[in-house]
Amino acid sequence: MNSLFDEIVSAHQQLRPQVRVTPLERSVLLSQQLGCELYLKCDHLQHTGSFKFRGASNKLRLLSDEQRQQGVIAASTGNHGQAVALASQLMGVNATVYAPATAAAIKLETIRALGGQVELIAGDALNAELAGEQAAREQHKTYISPYNDLQVVAGQGTCGMEMVEQQPDLDAVFVAVGGGGYIAGIGTVMKQLSPKTQVIACWPENATSMYSALEAGYIHPVEEQETLSDGTAGGVEPGAITFPLCQQVIDRKVLVSEQEIKQAMRMIAASDRWIIEGAAGVALAAACKLAPEFQGKKVAVVLCGKNIVLEKYLKAVSAENQQ
Image: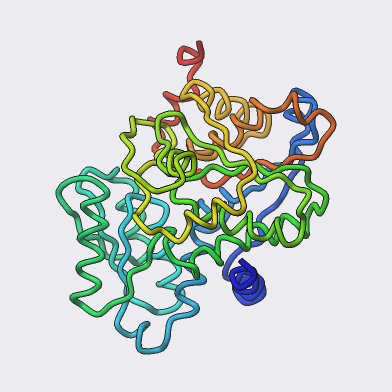
């Protein structure tokens, strides 16, 4: 973990100004409603609308000249692909993103607009990942994993460095978890610089791959259901480096329902006028759930992204969907 922390510190120093320092803002209304000092880490304001730009930028920064000339490959249906495309464009690297043919058209259009080439693959996200990894091997290009790469994790950890600098006495930080790279980076920073801060991992009840692995003590296949938190959905690769890191840095695990995610997305639209994606709603929903335990305490909710298809967002926050 000490080695990873050193990598995070280096990334924090070297990635500016390409990677934004995003605000940590106190939500006046949510603080009043929940009875705690609630801060929003606005990573949805990062370039490409999600935290993924941090890790992609750090990975590309550390490539050799030869690796940059050969180009990179990623697999994604949205945030990771956009991040790799923009980071590659800014560094003069050719990027190809493998995506399932069923991915939202607007997300694929955005990847192309950011300079990425898109290769559509029949099947689901896993098929796209397998195809991307195989193509990278065959073409001798660097494959950029969304989470299973320490250099990517180090880039994501810069979010934690910013939070410690912006509010050094947080009692807890709530982070939505998919593959575990984001919370691994943030948690590593907290353990080193702010050990009193509880690192609280948050999942939708419908997509619990890493949660189930942590509960069992090993990675295993998990059947997931459809969720608004598509940014955290999907399985965890066998042998993923993030699994032992999550075991070390996570202090508490929380599950939230789809209805609670919707309510959180609606709350923040009303209180702070932010449009957030489902994964960010997961973190806020978990904070709402545990708010009675943090009365008068300082807590941060990490808003990991805002990239949600408009129709899906409107359906999630519409009044008739609030039971």
